[in-house]
Length: 471
Image 1: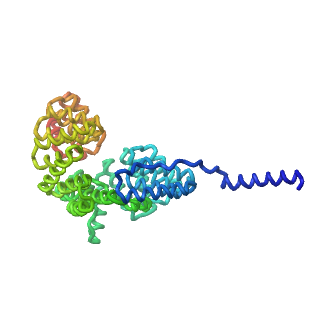
Image 2: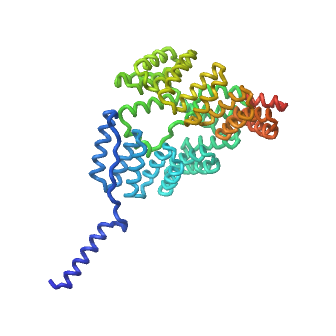
Image 3: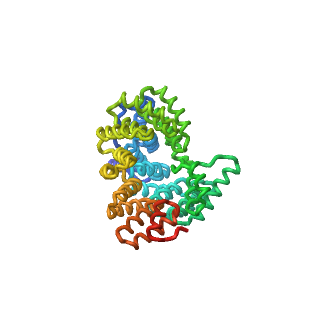
């Protein structure tokens, strides 16, 4: 063969290889190490699933599906950081899979990375705008972040795709409540509850919570009390096929514990007790199971059995802060204030940076009217992450009881900003502002509180102080 022909053959072979290697014009991603997790104390079923899936991913590291499956296994069983790493690797191999972007957004949001979660869910919707759960979930995040107008648009997009999507309709009612359109919210929720009753189906307890809230704000006190008695503030899990693929990969104890949490979240405390007692037989001596069983017993009103189990747990595991905290809560419910305080202090000693333990200590001291002693635990609770509206509201109310009006005003203003729909926070701001002579702030806060609930004790007290007649 002539030299020129040989060169042409070699060049052609190189070009062909390059075309084969680059596929659609993009270079294949470089191999990445497959993330692993510590399985030393994992449930045997979870351990077997993870080890098998890791091996499968290593064997098919060039395939996005393999990485996505490992991501979902990690996601399902609570390892969110490696799940996100694997979702990213899957997306590097195929960036046009809307479900992978969506599931990564959920993991990012659960870890508290709101900016990354927003960007990922936006990309998912750009790739597949017809998946309704992506719209209502984005709406939930927008509303929780205070962007009511954007949330309303997301919920309307949900219903444009699927008119039967309960999450979209409930979302619109929540937007109406958040923006003071209480009559509109009441009409939406009452219609939903009636639709369930027409087919003799029990509505989700969350609908009763929203119904009672809307009735309270529109002055329908009797109906509100009945609805709130049947309601729960926890939002239910709406249908979501992509997330169901992740849930299907839960296995072992984590699956069973998640089911117990769902039962408790939907008000089925007695079902949770039965479920956890069966689980206790399968995992005898498991502290996580027995602690959750105490919680379920207390929620079901079986305080005596809950107390006995909590004491047994503390005797067997005195060095575990979660056990001591559970015992403290059980004693608090049983009215054993000193024992509750001792157990809670033990939990704090074992884990000094646990905000929930500091708040529990403050709550016990407040019940004993030791307001001065409750201030430091409240400050530590907020410092160590228990810093939602309820902590600031409680701190503000304690400061009011101590007549430290300037400090109280600051704490209550934070609570009102964190939870603008809390009438007690606005009523407290009005009282404290009036005490320090800031009448313009007091009147404005009172107006907000009265719009939310004119019968709230703090709102009524503020109205009396400012000599504003109660409607």
